[in-house]
Image (cartoon, rainbow, N blue to C red; front, side):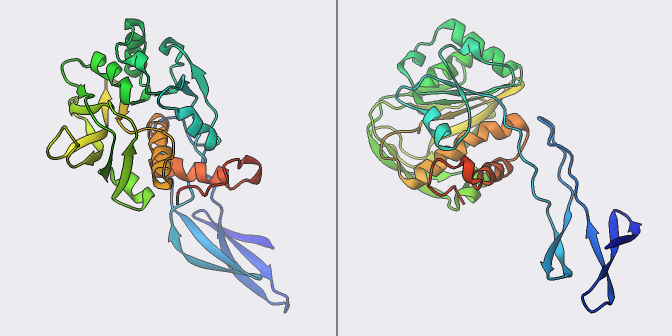
Length: 295
């Protein structure tokens, strides 16, 4: 096979068929640039082809496969009532456990587990988190870590924790998250009393999960998880987190919610981050969790 013409990025080849005849076919070489850490450029469309013996049949223009996401460093606080590190381990995503928020690299995603220590956080931890967010960092904080949020924006965010153990039907208001899960609502279980329910949200906050009445508390819609921009960074809060006897759908939800701050930090869509992670799980040497990835 030898090239005979180049025109607008399309290379035409002369191919010798078994019969001795020649046929002109086209092939477009797609060489995407390495994915930048931030401010990514959209992928250009490529030409999908299906191979049949010696023939190459074009089947139309489709989006080019996303490049592999360059995963940022991830720091996770010590486990307590929540254990996001366990979810990352099941996903084969490396992370480092920290005890103090002052140990956050500026380019790291921070995951703050639900723990009593955040109910009245030390000022040093609040300052470290504020500095991380001001510098463009991203954090996912769960349940009792609401104390950190209240100290960051005391005039805007508030929570109540006189809640009961209960199962609720959560509405997924984030469209991309709903599409990846393949549903608009799911049942989630709060297995302990005293979980933190948002009462007032920071300015500009976007709900991720909502629900109807909360037993013993709210009448009407309530927010269970939300995100909002703060200075140059972003914080995501969730009342719901890892616990014993999670359903398959709850596990899928938590995996995707952990990917959300990673997507924000890398400047990628949640879909591309999920696709990149799924592709790594298809490599035999990387699979330790035998459950199927989210489809």
